[in-house]
Length: 158
Image 1 (spheres, rainbow, N blue to C red):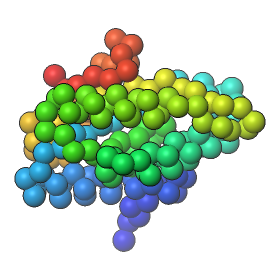
Image 2: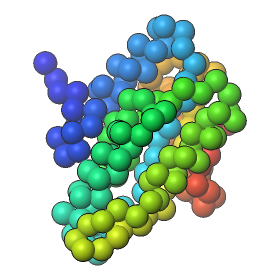
Image 3: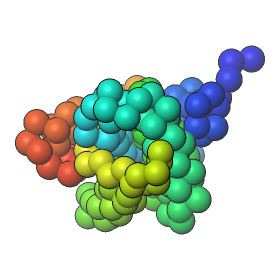
């Protein structure tokens, strides 16, 4: 059976996230899917080494996994995380995105330093922005890329 856990962080992986999204859609639930990444995570790894980047990711994952209001936090790839959160309206999803940005940008101790990164977040609402996991993941990725291009902290699906 394929793994549903990310080997580096211990968080659920993409496979687990897709299952959770499909399960919630089948149950008729409304929720927000957010995709978040650290701005220039490769710069962090180049400057301080891969171990510092991995330590940052593990600590952020641990912090977010224990935070109330976040459901199904998953590592997708690299420094990209995704999460599901209860939200029925764009305003509710924006509140979650703002909180997530705050949580991601909070300094993380690593290698005797406090690492601070800038988050970029894209969000899609289910079922309004898609009726399946692949579509919602694409919509959230497009919104995140728009946030990156416009240098916004977060962007919602258009």
